[in-house]
Amino acid sequence: MMGTGKSLVGKVLEEKTGFPRFDTDEMISLRLGMPIDEIFAKRGEEYFRNQETETLLSLPRKEPAIIVTGGGIVLRAENMDLLKQIGTVVWLDADGATLRARIRRLRDRPLLRTANPRASLSELQQTREPLYRKASDLRVDVSQKNPEEIAELIMKNIRNFPIGE
Image (tube, rainbow, N blue to C red; front, top):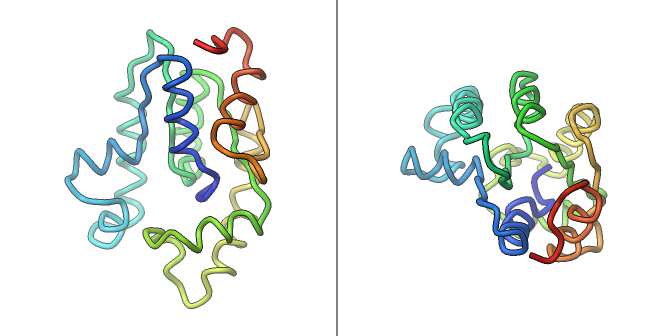
């Protein structure tokens, strides 16, 4: 879900493990030469979701890696199947208050540019939670935790993850 710190945790995991990190939002933004909110505004959500799928298909699969995705990646079963084939899927979860506090500081959330962003966030959570639950191999509650603590929890809970490298 947006606001859980996926990108920051991905960077910490990259530093701690030495594994390459692939952030699908960063990759899409770089390839198209515009930020995610602009992609949504100019080309729409469906176009962006197609880009997510194409990006997942392009990822290398032979070596260990950290893959960071946007929160809406679960909206397509094909994407979840691809992620499951690649490796362990970790769901970073947070309570509503934590998400609202974190997202309030972020202005680039196209799905929250509504008359009632708080209600939109709540609706997104309700819609996506069952999808996250179904797709994930590991759920980590990130409320009240910093990115380093979250990364440590992930490494401790994934078998064969190199701790402390």
